[in-house]
Length: 264
Image (cartoon, rainbow, N blue to C red; front, side):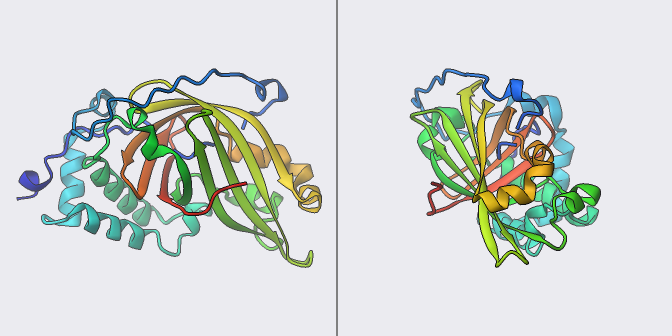
């Protein structure tokens, strides 16, 4: 029954939330965007990346674990239930929970209604909010950045301007003990279409505001930027009107939901 209901094609495990260069020399690499969002199709097709990276047996296993009668809506509900209370995964996720999330992600990817997302850039454009990522800040890195006691992470937003070929990531912070000082790290990047499902991303600039928050991070600013470095390629593995999933060249997975809030 499950195979008749889902009929999954091979899934791209190739890795959308842009992660910054480690050296100043990398920061001004220029890309000329090439965008012509035409011939958008929702017809499902197999991906050559999926053929290289994921065995069909993994999909069958994921199907069995969620049940024979799962719909896309039910899979989404299970997925959001799985990472509820996980703080977007940034401070780590128990291995059993992480495996469960990966199975559900793969199952959603097998039902991707937009297999050629870079030909449908109107569906990618706009504001998105990160709800889960496999990027983690653990151990000494978390301590150095003051993310145990002094600083709290707020929301992660991404705004995509298709016409300009630009993406802006905004990570919000609040600092306890500093009159509850709040601010943000803003990362701007350019992107170019590399294939019907992949984009190449190049870091442009970053700022932390206000200055008082920058003073808190100044000593470990390179460490902070390294964690959220957007340079590389990003594969959009699932896209509909409200949810986007991507995998990057560093092996990270990103899940974002459509947001009404625009980054400034």
